Length: 174
Length: 214
Image (tube, rainbow over all chains, first blue to last red; front, top):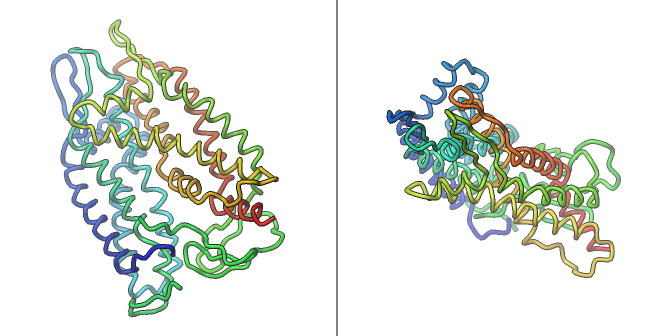
């Protein structure tokens, strides 16, 4: 590797970014991501509310896509990355871990879907007092959680999984 | 941020796998199909040969569609005699006003800046790859790095799915009609997808190095 960062430091950075992402995931799911105002009456909705509304409106296919992208993937990605980082010092099946890492590395970006939907709705639904959509604080927390998880996966290098030395002291990146 | 995705060239026909660090000999003449690392199963080159000329043409086509995709309206909403249109740029600007400024900046980054850098870097590298009488010399490591990062951070493909979901959500409260910007965006995303699938960064880098070695 072309960096002077040791594998231990690299892993510490990956861990801290991951923990920061987990912290932001809590307000992301509890706070409303947007507020819909129709004829003067406002209604705020969280990520889970939005999925439920899609189900009730008779669009289960779209509801499942949003459920996977905004609820399942963020938690699944954080969990898988944590297991991978945790196993590094005593990795006994690097092939599986590398595959899992590659998978979550590429699906993680799809979580941005909800942020885009809120931006679109806020931009297009603006009919003064009649109807408007305002973004909510949850969207900021959610966007931060997604970006931090992506950065965490970036900070980690799958080469660490293939290092034979169990002490993790010197890995001889000559 | 550590740059760990790079393949480090060992000699003319050997390289180090970016994922597990194994030294591998580059097969002189490959059969059809993708080439994968035997140890960690990392894909080292795509299933198709890299043809810089045709990929460059596709990149130019994407660039032509890019500006209308940004500024033309994506959809039109009609409700109780009122109507409203919004383009991609409107979505970004809408979030950049007010307290959600950071989210707006993130949208600007993933939907405008990164796709633009993706186009520029792909064009620059493919141009260098097709140039047989290379006078500039070294394959540019800066543009290679930009290309690798922009593949991940340019998110127009995800935005497209977002449009689909927003349109179905709005379908029951108003009349939604797709706009010309949407058409440009769909074609631009499809073309970019083709270029990205065929121009794998590692493969492109080897091609550039081979050109350079001549």
